[in-house]
Length: 237
Image 1 (tube, helix red, strand yellow):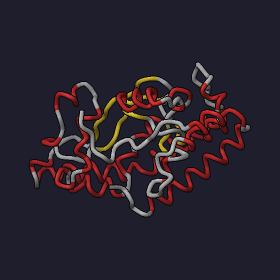
Image 2 (tube, rainbow, N blue to C red):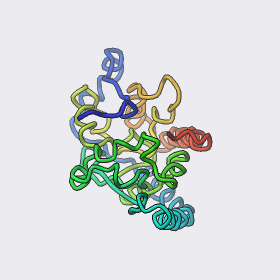
Image 3 (tube, rainbow, N blue to C red):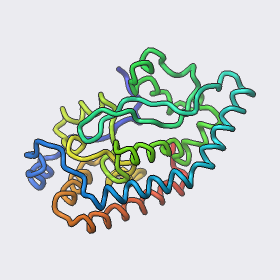
């Protein structure tokens, strides 16, 4: 299937990565989440869902009003497609950005990401969707997934199934080993030439293996700080 150029910029691991992080490529089973990280994830996710509940309520109302005023923009606020995290399939929930007419209904019915590939087309966006995307508000439902245990706050970004399979075929293994994250060690470099380089995901898995649980949390806090800076800039597109 033809994909938008904005989708999935990740590249295969280089020879240098394979040499430096050789032990990671030898791992056969997913790595258990350290308890301090697990507890931190759930506490932050719960608090964030409480704090953002007024925002979700406002978005629900705005989405309903927009549907009344512009019938072609009417539709549910939430949608999902199937993604992969920690080597397993899960429903990745997000906030709808585009008009129903731009969604492939057959692919939507089977949870295929391609159903929503028009999200980068400005004319496909709803009024609410344009605002939601600019400030990454479409990611809010993923805090529920963190609370549920499908994701972590920090980890390699979970991919749609076909992207995950391509990632594995390229030789990348990080998303098979640890939980996908709302924020990735490489993902927070969005907007820079470093975005999409796999070395950051391997460095994070290396820290996962060798850092103490509390030192790993310091890395997570750094990634969260970088992620907040990206969101505040309103750089979603």
